[in-house]
Amino acid sequence: MATKYLKHAGLAALLLGGSVGLAQAAAPPPPLSEIQSLIPKPGGSGPHKTSGVLPGAKNAAIVAGYNYGHCYATYWFFDGSFYYIVALNEEGTFVSYSSTSPVEDSAQQHLKNACEHANYYWYVTNTSTGAYDIIWIYYNH
Image (tube, rainbow, N blue to C red; front, side, top):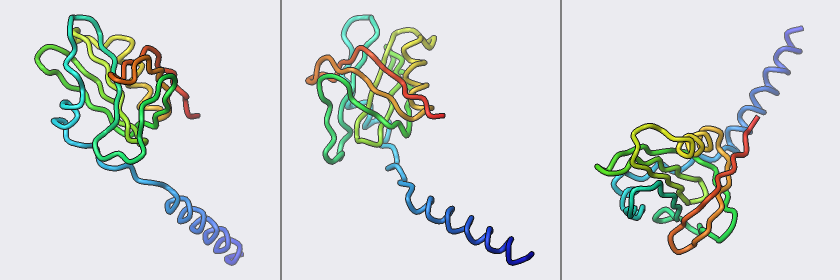
């Protein structure tokens, strides 16, 4: 009887150890000041959506059309004029949304949910600025 439990415990330990070994740790997020320097200062008063490549990211790119992100961290900050949320992706990219309202709007909530649920796509309309118009969340269940 004890052999049966030891066998199952050994198998569980093997599976757990194997899965931990396969998991990749995301790089620590860069300092907020570095993130702030990446985001162009919005002109005008409307909401602004932009994306880009994080410094030091190897083989990361923003392409016209759909881009995939696996979010590992978010930043919220106010720069004196705009309220920002910035999602950092394991692929070496970031997506940001800013508005002048201190109240979280639906687009900011969407980006926050995208990070909480890990996988999402965004549709880039201008590769030079990283401007996008759609976020599509892939919920992990």
